[in-house]
Length: 166
Image (cartoon, rainbow, N blue to C red; front, side, top):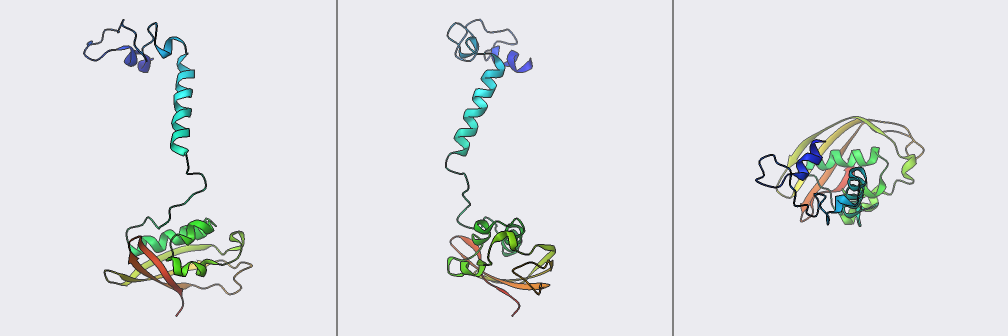
């Protein structure tokens, strides 16, 4: 195995295998002398997954990660289409999150052919107009075909503070 050969080489050995052992290289005190390669790879990979996953299960960022009003609007539609209520609410200013109380997410409409353009923008406010094909659903009897999305920029980035046809 190329990986095995690489791990046995010590820096500067110019291709000659190391005989000194060492922690990883399989000498008398090396960890690989007590473990087989597949088991070592699985153990190290499992440990990396545990460390990377600590504290992140089921959590979403507290703010929309997008850098522009257009990206925030499109990200919101993506969260809605994924039926992810918690993530969809992260795209809203805290004072406007109740606008996402649409009932059970499993009953939400789906939005297809979404096209958004920035109608106006300043340093702190933006208006994005989005057109789409909205499916009918138990929570929406008369689907819309466009919304204006108003956003404001604060310390947490661009957040929606209003949307609709008006």
